[in-house]
Image (cartoon, rainbow over all chains, first blue to last red; front, side, top):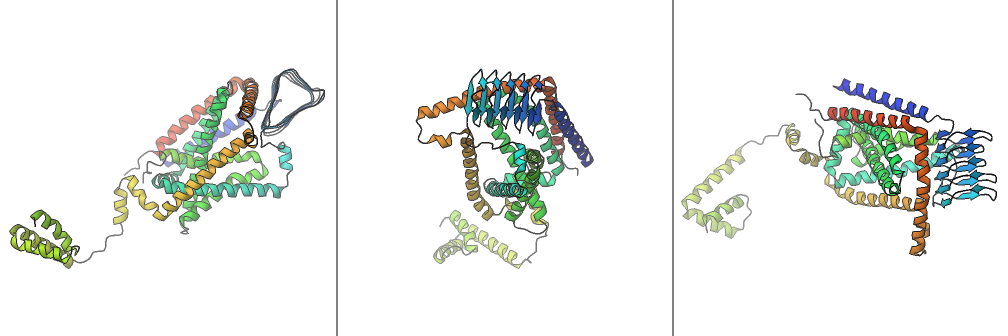
Length: 309
Length: 183
């Protein structure tokens, strides 16, 4: 039976890899970029929309559709036939820029030069925390500084996770113990189930987001959706860390609180260390590392069922 | 003294847990009442038998065996020491409050409402909220349209495939994870 579990895990990894490469191929359009900035040079033309996620969009040529930057800014020196939309970044319309639709900026200021023309509305909502620069600038920060920021984030995350784990053991001792025992005794099944849930959500969540973005009700429904995902995956990370600490700390007879702390520090390191070099890896790493904990949480029915011994 | 009271006092007297006066009254009743005398004598015999019996060391497998037979909720009681539980409750509630507070603070900061919340009239605050909603509506429609234009049917099929594949694998792992061990 264990062989079947490992075989299914292989199938799952293959499915995940296929989805990853298929997604990359799907996103490999000349006017689409994920995780880096995109420049449409002067004289070039985008036949449709230009979309950048996790980077800046620089339009020197012409975009026939909308020019959109998610978690980034839009810099327009050329012509945009549709809207200019920037979520989580500053946008700049230089002299000579022409926008046929609206210019909407959520999360940053909109700098509009005197000679820049916007035929539609100009809407600007400045968030208090602004994304300072694009990906290329983030990577230009010295390695030591990035390491210090990541290290501090890891320590704070692990510390908060440790305190919450302590609280969970205090408030729901039986449930927490059951979930940890499940993660330890049935780790391949937990890993497989957690990863399968992630694959499922990768299919469902974009569809839901697409539907929610089509109306004002998205404002109400999107935050709870992402909050729920955040809570579930945080619990998965936490349980993975505590279970890992139990496995590694039990042979050397470490006290329970130290075992949890060590496991959570390891998990924080596994998630955040790659982010020193490639910030975009933090999220996939977190999804993979949280899989055993998430699966154990489900298999133990949120800790109400003990694992079969 | 009534017989029922006397029988209740007998076991207490065996454990030396009643005052002397009470014990005297019990013994007076035992002398008078033949049924209670018989019961008292039987209890004394049992006690002397138990005292004379050799003390056996329980086998090492007894406690784990008993724990294994207990219902799951009872069994896990031994896993968490009470001190851990007491400390954890306080620390956990504090950490949960910190986490929730941090999350709310981040949401408020990101939404830009917090820095401008204090010192503003409710009308101005609501006006800011209305502007945010308008900006959201203006931003999301082109984003949704662009996502559909770019990813279209292929993206939809890929998403549906991922959802179905993930669900199928999830069911398989769920069944494997819940199977009963043989034997």
